[in-house]
Image (cartoon, rainbow, N blue to C red):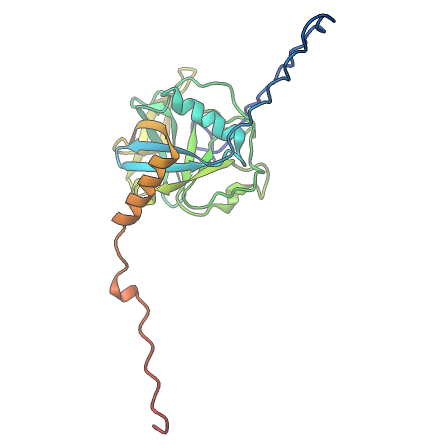
Length: 253
């Protein structure tokens, strides 16, 4: 999947965190002993939660910085910058993916930061409800765009070459994703970052907006998850297993 257009499927990344070592002159012999250097603070490895408020409803994402640190850091930076606010989901392929994160309401592509490294070998799979980085054919070309898997898509995991990096999953709002996946699509003109105009297929006929993306605290995420569970419809009686027939009395025919 290309990040800007009809990709075989979206997902990419490339972001290199460079650390610069700071050299220090040796302290004078008369100087007091320098305090021990502060230990580097490890990047968080617990889940990071992001809420996507859309015109179809809210999605709560649980991101995995332990397995996809580059992808999660990149995505969260865009979230905190407000980059995704007021964008649209510009590509829907029923039974495949919903893609967004790159175009405004006029279908003009937004400027991005440099691409990041593709973490497709992190062990996470493109299963239903997961979020992955979209990219161009080059493996390490993902920037801001992402896609949500409408079903299990093992072909995106790299069977025939570099795959698409999964970096999280939907924990609230799978019904919202399903509704997006059923939206009618059409062909519309879009403008890429260079100003070139071209027509895209698979564009929702009615805008599906990502109105606000925000990082939420684990406590708020837990409340959202509990509220979603409480609102879930109870299984219908027909779905309940039938009670076992009572054992026949001894000697009965």
